[in-house]
Image (cartoon, rainbow, N blue to C red; front, top):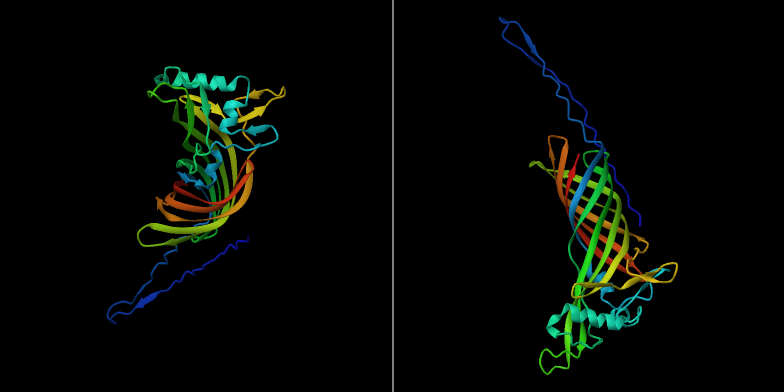
Length: 309
């Protein structure tokens, strides 16, 4: 996709003029010259700003953390489903899981003897919580109206939901042979954006400036964790093999996958003492998000306030 940067240069010549006032012959003639008032120079050169705001990620990519897992996330790591993690990974894993359930849920009086999963135990509609994002941007102004903007930003996202598991053997509630229990499930990832585009500014009589712009966006997504909880006890679903092929719980993050997209932005700015800029803006981007073996085209949004010099 090609973007054309339009540069409009307006030249306003200084006009000097003089006015000669004639008086009655009995008085001496006087000549009044009006002084030339220099026009204020246009804004050119670099400005720098910090953005703080909310990153509103599309929920379309959050379903990857629903507990069903993937075959692998990279050459060294395996992304297990919750049933695999609780029954197949490690030694005596299922017995340890049952003991953890009895420890975290004393209301069952230690009577849970087994666990079972069904096809409806995993969340079908996961979403991301709004998260704070931080950005640095550099803007080169060709004139009061047109500029080129380069921006880098980062946000740490978290998706939360619940999964269910059938517990076999509990004596509470009375006369029950099994109980369906809910547990917490989370997924965490990091997003990095590098934006390059143009910006157009319009002025009004109230001291505010309206701007809009568009450009290309290079976005990177990195999976940080996918964790299933039993009470307060976390179980990481992404495990990595070390040199001795032993499973470790601390997951070294997968490589960040970068893809190219595009964005559009708009908002309002105001200038303070001809030096400081304050603004509020909205950014809408069409991004390709690659997480593990999954790749989705999604719309992401950012709402932010900006402080610049």
